[in-house]
Image (tube, one colour):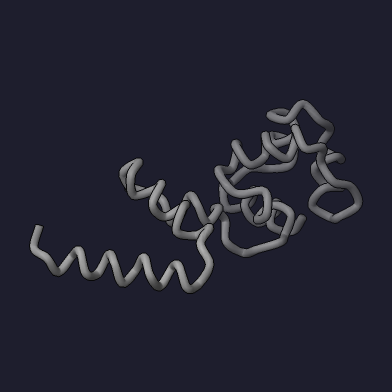
Amino acid sequence: MKNLQKIRLQKNMNQLSLAIKLDVAQETISAYENGKSYPSVATLLKLCDIFDVSADFLLDRTDVKYTADAVNLQKLSPEETELIKTFRTLGRNNQNAVLNLTIGLGNTGD
């Protein structure tokens, strides 16, 4: 979990202070960062909340700190969010049809 170490250092937090927040030993944080052990799901979720990052980032599955939904859906209305979520479930042909329809509706001036 190298990204855990990166984000911890970026936040100017030492292993001991993080361990205290999680109610674990400092050695446990060291083991997480060195890949010798992994946190439980509950602890992983606490880490995500503490650092405001995705679990994928903490588990070194991506270099993007935030979830795609968090990045892509910021500042959108509930209707826009629902539209995007629904659009993403469609096959490519249906996505193209929706895009064409939307473009057509946008050109009507209403």
